[in-house]
Image (cartoon, rainbow, N blue to C red; front, top):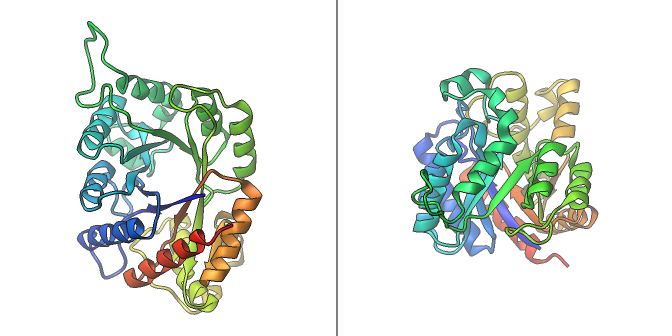
Length: 328
């Protein structure tokens, strides 16, 4: 069972994006030392608490500061970009860091509609997502004689392409195209089981992938006690509520009484959205992760966790790695 890490380059209150980038590289180096297979970064825009907007640039920074771990996008929001530009960017990264770069693709814009327009793209371009994915795959194919336009670099370069999703749409498309599939169960688990079933049932082998390969995301917070882990988790719970209230901001510190922070409706909403979460000591994480794997049978798990204090975040992912290494 491979275990990997998803990071958003979080910007805590009192910090700057520069601090976030330094912390992200620090975390990537720890992930490499702790046996994580991949270190992925996600594209978001107009969110003060997330600094990974220029995702390809940050991937290059992390790959250049590590030596073995795979580094990639989880993911690039394709409606915001032309497929040719994405192929050039990731062809460049794969040329600089051979056999270490992954490209995950998402269908959502990763932002609000006003910001999508500011990006010179439009949300309705998500309807063209299947065509855009196939165009992008085309740019990675070897150059053909007489080809008028090509990705330089990009053409003929092996870049693993994943499809990301939180619904049946991307599961069906990944199956149809014979691509690996990553499900966003860390914030939208409702359709997880159905999407996995559809992906495995309809998968068509391709030259990129002979058998289905599914990765599931899981929130984890590890600490020396369950009470401390639950306290640290209030950072992620607060951030989720702020986003739903239309008040995104910097990553908040943990609080002692989350019950006083949210309404009953917000508590229910967060409970559903963050249902795929495992909190506690190394033994509790091992038990919880093992149960999640046993129930859903992913080929790989993608761990994430929004912890306010950087040292506590490092400690949390180190505990999670120890738990994963102890899985049966």
